[in-house]
Image (tube, rainbow, N blue to C red):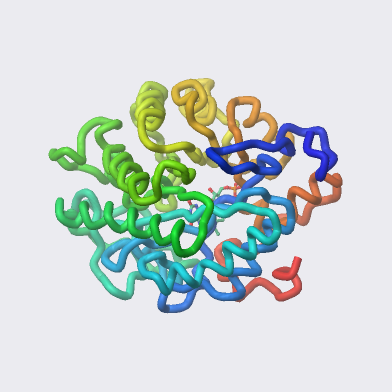
Length: 370
Ligand SMILES: Cc1cc2nc3c(=O)[nH]c(=O)nc-3n(C[C@H](O)[C@H](O)[C@H](O)COP(=O)(O)O)c2cc1C
């Protein structure tokens, strides 16, 4: 058991990923905060925001989704980027502040594709195919009305997008000092648009069956691995649901999931981050396996981060029992940035009453100082 926390729970035992040691199995899930400058640089308030999770006992923090190039990747107004040295240098104090508290921090890299709704450089959007995304723009992130009809991204632009992920990852490690890279392949953004049958109608090498549609994510993982070298932790986030299509399920069900996790186990990824609304539930109607247990079964080599309503310790332990190595808390960490410490002391947690989508400027100074 982990002595500093003094609680007998598997969530509070140490673990290791590549060369990194973690004091416990508790991490903060990536959460967009639309709180950067117009130039895409994170500032001092963001430093306090991230630092307090490490101070509160989370051993790993994954950043909000960070855009990767100056073409089509930026998704939201006031989203931070990692597209040049200035933006990367602005992340450095955040990384150092987390390290000073004994925490680790991974950069989540994302490309919005057809869900981009606040890119000042490009009003038009691109996607795998010219298919208008379901749902409507996120009003909490300055969006309004239906998504734009995307233009089909060209081969040359796909190559540029892959290169964007690789360059951003290199800046994240070499300039900002991040401990690892998470590629955002989930929640409806560009890589998930390629992965999803509804949005990917391509007949070329980027379309096809479920593993072929995972192809762009696999190519991004390869390019990023080359950019960051063999020793830096690298992983992919995957989901069924999307910010614009909450109920989406993989039509290929368990057999498809098996093929996806097998392909990932063969890829240069070290970890997979699976997110579901309730991570312990069966992934497919009529089945009994959760996405976590399918990942554990079909990708035994991979370190698994699990996310989805796990802010109750019993649920977190249940999902660890099913195969997760690390738990990620989103809303639970926002409300309780010191969730690990409070839970270890069996102290009551604060209730869920925050406006979750609000920028960091809306968090009270007293709460930011926690
Ligand atoms: C305010 C907010 C912003 C989010 N932004 C991101 C993001 O940038 N990248 C991402 O992969 N998921 C994002 N998510 C999803 C969370 O990582 C997580 O999957 C979701 O909150 C469910 O986990 P929970 O039940 O622990 O809250 C966001 C969620 C919230 C509440």
